[in-house]
Image 1: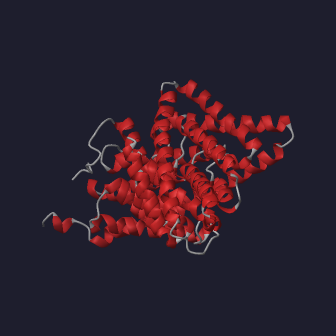
Image 2: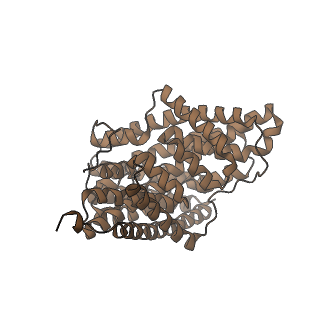
Image 3: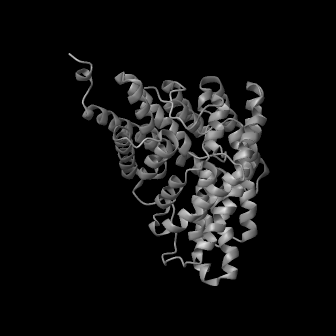
Length: 436
């Protein structure tokens, strides 16, 4: 009997991908629901502490303790779960890193709840991607598959994780293909699609199919909006270049600390977030409510600039201290503030653009994603998925292309390339690297 005849049929491979999608979706749904509970509790604590110094001190200490506990948990049990986890997933897909899923799954889940529930300016998307890849590694290990299928199941789990976090199955597929696998072969693409669709279907059962953000303007954006979109892309490149370099510097600042020093530093960062939450509960956490405020209310340009600067610093500190949490949602806040601010400035020159400020806010989100991650197709698809505005394709593409080209001209490198190189040394990142 030949070796080929011993291989399982294609249906078995696809069934495993379906299982990965359902399990990753289940983990993502549980994580998202748990975060909503702890975020709500933190918001209520922030409101309760208003006007009382003693209550405010309790909130500050509690947030500091949550951040410290998250970093201690990560450092002691699974250091690979620090940060977003996406560079670790990319390394695992390339065959550079083994996934210790029995540790990664519980530590990332619990650590993420502590860090983000305590108010650190981080997002759930990166952790959900890493946990999804962990589910893929679990299924691969239990099924005793070869290295090629293991890599595909890891990628499928990662795509399912992003689909779960954003209600965006297409964005999950595109992100995996653009950032992790770079492979359109049917044997790779089909399992990723199946896993992402299965995970998103599960999310729809619990959270509904509606887009995460609502953009109020429904009239077509005038052609003059292309000028604004290009400028948004340019300013996003400036912000993204500074962000990527600042994030690495922040990691370097905290990296030399031993366990006690790292825990103490995380406590200080968490306490700072707690203090910010006493002032305004919307300032801290993943920034979802803050994006909604920027989208739906008339925020002055000076306030937008202040929000951008504050959230910029908060995200660098939150990520740099080594806690588990991603940058997707935080960078959307930066992009939303930038897009709204640029749109507001141009609306004074071209009043016909004034009703479309929320649209420029959404375009800013896609441009910021592209400038920082350098995945323009994912940025376009993700923004459309988040807002449900398919009519913005042209403006999003222009803003994303300008952001990518300008960031490259400024010498900025994609953030996950920087983090991957930082963790695994200089390698040829253009090669897939997966075992054959």
